[in-house]
Amino acid sequence: MLKVNNLTFQYKNAKTSFSFPNLDLKEGENLLVLGKSGIGKTTFLHLLAGLLTPTSGEVIIDDVPIYSLSNAALDKFRGQNIGVIFQKKHAIQSLNSIENIKTRLFFSGKPNDTNKINLLLDHLNIDECKYNNVTTLSEGQLQRLSIAMAVIHEPRVILADEPTSSLDDENCKKVIDLLIQQAQLTKAILIVITHDHRVKSLFSNSITL
Amino acid sequence: MNIWKLSIKNIKSKPLYTFLSVFVLALSVFLLLAVRQLESSLAFQIKNNLGAIDLVIGAKGSPLQLVLSSVLFLDNPTGNIPYAEAKKISKSPFVKTAVPISYGDNYKGYKIVGTTDKFATLYDAKLKEGRNVEKSMEVIVGATVAKQLDLKLGDTFQSSHGLIENGIDVHDEHMIIVGIYKTTNKVIDRLIVSNLESVWDIHHHDSHEINDEHHGHDEHHEHHEKEIEEEALSREVTSVLISFRNPSAFITFPKQINSTTNMQAALPKYELDKLYQYTGIGFKTVSWIAYIILIISCLTIFISLYKMVKERSFELALLRTYGASNFQLIRMVAYEGISIGVFAFLLGYALLRMGIFIMFTFFETDFDQYILQQIPYTELLKIGGGVLVMIIFSVLFAIYPIIKMNISTTLSNEK
Image (spheres, rainbow over the protein chains, first blue to last red):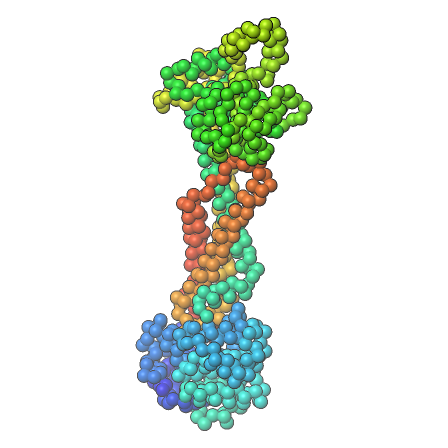
């Protein structure tokens, strides 16, 4: 369960402040957040992920108001309950694909289940490059690896920032389908934030900032 | 996966930087250790070789030369002194033992020292096999001599004149080995010890033969013993090694010798301390160079870590979103620095051991006398601690960006 109440944010030394819509999402629900560039989409996502402290308002995940947590507790909570796909596709470059996933599990404190990892990699069709260093992965493989990284620890909330911006129509649909599918598997809440109107039809539930 | 593994992977992913950091740091560790090693070995060596010798009395000249020649057997003697004078000195109430030595010959580069039985006690040398010297031309060889020249009891050899090996000026007499000393790690290991008569006999052989012809065979024997006694007193020795009965003698006795006799008295400890101070300047210079390299190497490590933190700020922010705490990231950087430090320290130590091994393998005979002392643990700890402190400083400066990191901004910044 995810609730957003009266969330506002103002960057330091900035005149304008952002205020964000209230949300109330249940287990397994999806939400598409649309908005033009510069409207505060990424800010919203970072607020939901506990990466930015809001000026006012609160974000409640599974009855936990995350901004009332201490820094260390928030780090831990984030690691366990939130999975984020960032706009910039990136992984730890000194590691190969499977090591990246294991690192993700290590920091979230979840058990290192090799079977589960293999299953997921297989499902995302990147098991052939699991021992490849991430710097050698193609754009598409990296995209799918970042999806794997966001879901492997079975988070309560999956947040995706512009996951489709660099993809063609076909792959765009594939990626969103994969995300929805993965979220369904673990009954996670999926929030996709994008300016890409192509994906609108794939979601039943959407808001515009 | 854990933080250690991540650090190691990070290190491996930039082999050139890692190599540079480790190599430069190892070099400074090696230099620091080597200086300490040589310093402590030299100090030990000097102390060790002094044995129970408090004073050396020899011909006038440089006191350092007298000490180097008569105590360490590293230099030519300053000259000779009359044996009768030496005898007189040994009667002084200050003197506990007085050991006359006389030398001027060598066998294959190893010096032959004519002396008395007390010589061995100065170095605490015990016989490994054989017996003590009983008459002229009998010798006991030191452990190193026996090993290097593969000498056994009963072997005979001809000495050559002078203190360095030569094949031209060989004496006719055959010396016979009657004993071999146990290893002492002192200078006696590299000496061939005979009695004083052997040295005199070799050098006065010609005159002796002429004398012999004047005597009938019957009376020869009794005359001969008397003759030796008389002759001995007219003979010369190189120097006398003295140990005192009590410490007060250190002040008065040398002065007395220097002012009232034609000989000089030198305090080996004083002379060698002086020498040691001169060489100490060299050690200090190398130490400073090593410290400068240490600082440079820590700068290298700092730059490498800082560069990593800066360049991979996105990755570090990503790790934060995975649930890593600030402290875990700091540990990751710290482990990286510490791994490099530990590895470099071990490499430096290995280089030192290797250097010593090579030195011993290739210059075995030259360095045998030079006993290498194990570096004291306190020195190892000091140098290791110094390296650790430098690394902790490097890490502390390098992690600053992590503490200041704003995850959100870092992740939003397109690069």
